[in-house]
Length: 185
Image (cartoon, rainbow, N blue to C red):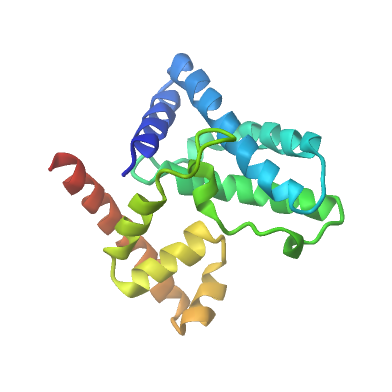
């Protein structure tokens, strides 16, 4: 797990526990990451920086209202990516732009700490996922990182829907164990 992931997760868990300072720090660290993510996406389809800033604010509000849904045993960055991705899709739908106009599959972009830094945690996440069995890795990447439905994932990989759910559950448990083992080593 990267230092960024550890820090963001710790701030999120502390904010869930009522620590207002941790919550302000979390939002302060998320804003530049989200800004960089949205600027790349919006600029790619010829839209304004103001739209990117609107999306940053909408996403921060969503994090605020949905923070109780974050599972402290899960990675924080994929949870954030899912919110950011859906806010982008909603924005493109409402502005009559097509989802196909902009690539939105790169969860690594949210790992960048500001507009000028590259993603630091990509290798660590890729390495961790690579340590999982193939079915678990595919299910987690498809549903949790790409935002596909369980049904879409089942069809894509020739699995039953219940097998996809079980693979995700077992894979996330295995990831948590790997992270604990790496942290304690």
